[in-house]
Length: 503
Ligand code: ADP
Ligand code: MG
Image (tube, rainbow, N blue to C red; front, side, top):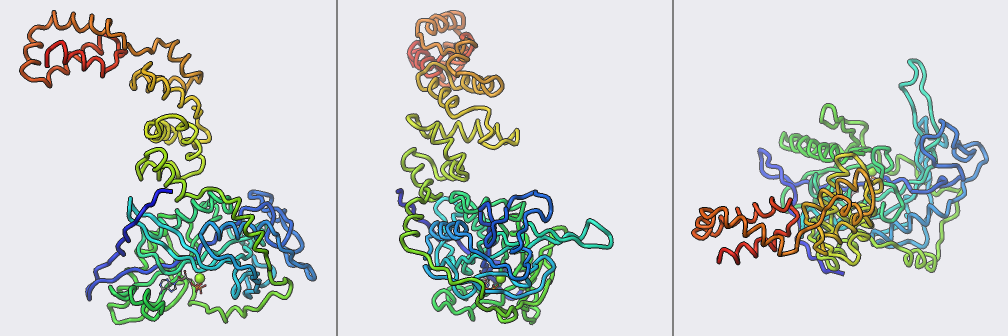
């Protein structure tokens, strides 16, 4: 694996009236576990089902019903932990977090406060080539999702849909290591990418399958370093938590607004109150939702319905042995094996489908050229039509076929672009389509020479000009290409022009 070394990024600094302020951000990400059944019942997790059709007696908390752990959800949490290079706790336990909510029929959420299944890990967050930060993960715990209250279907009534009640969530808690809005967005993207590679969460933010609670505080330069040296939170400012963010753009806007709000309070001689806030994207501001509740407000206690969760190291090892290649490793391999730039490798590894497509095309070919064609021609074209790489009208084999025709000198790059267009709309075998459309690069020097000789004879003044200024020899190259209908190999023409004019 390529050894990439990174420089630490600078924290975002906001200049206040009384001096500079730095941002400190920690995130709690709720990621819905990719699983067909819920965490403690066999009910389906299918989205878009008829309201209240995927609800078992356990999910709607009928008296006497007992939760039974879904071991696939546990496996997914372990896999996620391994993907974040985290410690897996062989013994964890579930706790009841008590609170009332109309879409939480149990009156409590089963979560893991004291003994989470996954311990400390880390995520490498790259901001630009060679600039990255390791954001520490504090823990991942498993918990149940709540249902959905619907207030806008009837003027006098509210409705509740329990389909989502009891679906498994992983809460992934970071240390407060994120130092600015862009880093926060980059962190969420990277985490999402890793989970998608692992297949443990589909990362669909629009549907709320991955959403973030963003904790923001501000401090003076030097304070964060003091916190790092001691791990004493006393060096940091009081945080506010912005709940339930599911857009990278809004996360950044909310952090920026919230930091400035806190700075204004502090510079006014006030105190930031620790509280839970909501971001209003229409107004571009955060507003208070409730004062911060403490863990003891929830009267947490071990869930008496569930035994502590004990897993075997051998099982964890088995999951570890079946881990897919993760984004950092894939990127490093693409750079090392195919000679890709940092940028190209990032683009091609952003999604597994793109990476697989690239590898199919690049296998046995010039990787850099394959990357250029996929990123510039294919992705450009797919974006224009709003298509995913999996919906590409051109297969990897077809693009590979086009690259082979260029590599063997049979067609020019210009012809290849035309061929690409024809294949895009009509399909077909690249070599056959090229032949059918008379796409054939003239490398036959006889034909090129004849065209050039005719030009030289007919344009003595151009010959004189080119002899004085070699740059003007390009005119002859252009004319030969024109005369041969763009079929001549430009490199061969250039060489011959230089030779004939004695340049
Ligand atoms: P809670 O569950 O009550 O919100 P946690 O201890 O789980 O509290 O931490 C919540 C998040 O807040 C973590 O991601 C943590 O890194 C972050 N955090 C803690 N202190 C600060 C701070 N001073 N500034 C920014 N983020 C913080
Ligand atoms: Mg929280």
